[in-house]
Image (cartoon, rainbow, N blue to C red):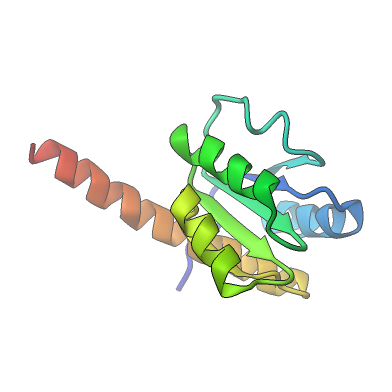
Length: 136
């Protein structure tokens, strides 16, 4: 069962306001702190690390790959949501550093569930990384 939000912070990055706004609101209603971005320039430069960065797009281009790589290189845990997800695009996002890549949900409740699952996975991943580093 996914954890409740517990004040976790999520960045939602999507150029499309008609999708970004209602899905940001759904996260806020579920208790998350949300910072929404309508372009890729600022989140690619910020050093702050939210609990999860969600990058949503209609299709994967070089711009999305560059954003994922830039953010992953700085330690962001990234969930990529794509409306038209081809296998090659999925592979490119994973290779760039996304931790999870899936089809973009249509319903806000499904989106909140995806975020909860990603945050649960990120906690487990970070615990394993800390344990591995402690063993070195």
